[in-house]
Structure formats: C-alpha cells, structure tokens
Length: 221
Image (cartoon, rainbow, N blue to C red):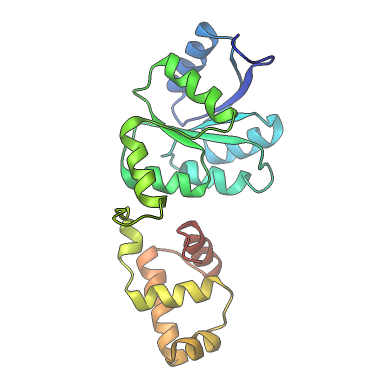
C-alpha cells in the first residue's frame, strides 16, 4: 500500500453486471489501495446501497435506463456530502461530461482507462483532486473557467429555449408566482403561462417542481 493506512472504500454503479464483475475483479487483483464494498445496477439500488455502505468513492456510470449517474448524484449528495463521485463511462461526449460534473462528480474517466490508471484516479479523487481523462479536461475548463474566449458547452435541451423562455424559467425556479414573473418581465400573466407551457413541452417535463430542478441542474438559478 502506498501512502494510505486504509484502502479507499469503493462502490460500483453500472447497469451491466459483467462490467461490474470485471472492474471488481481487476481492482481486487492488482491493488490493496482500494476495496470494493458494494455495487448496484440501477439508480434505485445505487441510492439505497450508497446510503447503507457510505463508501469513500462511487464509480458511477453516466447512462442507465432509469435516470443515470446525474440522478444518483441528485438523490445522494445532500444526505452524504462526504461521498466522492467519479464518473466511469463509455461516453466521451461533452454534454455528458458537463452534466455529471454539474451534478457534483469530482471527475470523469472513460472505460478505456487501464486498471492501474483507474486505481490512481480513485485514490486521487478520494484525496480531493479532480481527475479527468486528458481529452475531457478541456470540456470542463471551457465550461467552468471564467475567462475570455472560453467556449461554452452546448446543452441541446437548453438550446431549444428562447431567451424569453429562459428568463421565465429562471424566475419560476426562484419561486416567483406567475403574477410576479409577469411584473418583473413586463409581460402579461397569460404570456407567462404560454412560455411555461412551451418550456414544459420542450423539456418534456410535467410540473413546476421538475422545471425548477432542471433549471438548477443547469445553473440557471
């Protein structure tokens, strides 16, 4: 063991059982720096398991049928802020990277990573570092660095909304009533209702609560 008195306790979240088994076997065979203490194949299983086991690091798949890694983060981070999340995904798409980092992950690596590199990434995030596969670091810097020339990361869903719809959504997420939004934006209540209906349709959400969470996830609030 190098530099640690106890191994990093790791929880695996991925909807492919064979992949989980492979990662567990690899990690168990090559190092005593990490200890796989649990696993889950769905968002619901992950939330229950993480709350029960309270691991140091969660290795988190981004795409799962019932909501994906970002949903796990949303349900767990408030109650267990000390747990660190490292995304481990086949996807290297900018929108996936930014979505999970905005949700609260400490890093993002792709499934092409070697076993030894994965161990180093787990240990590093457990110690407070942010870890990204080389190509992905630029996405994060561009999305979060407050500097001239930073290239914004495209959010396909957000891009569907007009500037006025974003204004209405921002105020709605802050808790404004329709009448207050109308007064703030100098439009009629009927126009506010029209914009909200349009935003619900474009985002495929069903109510104000879901819209508020959607806006918060994209840091519109």
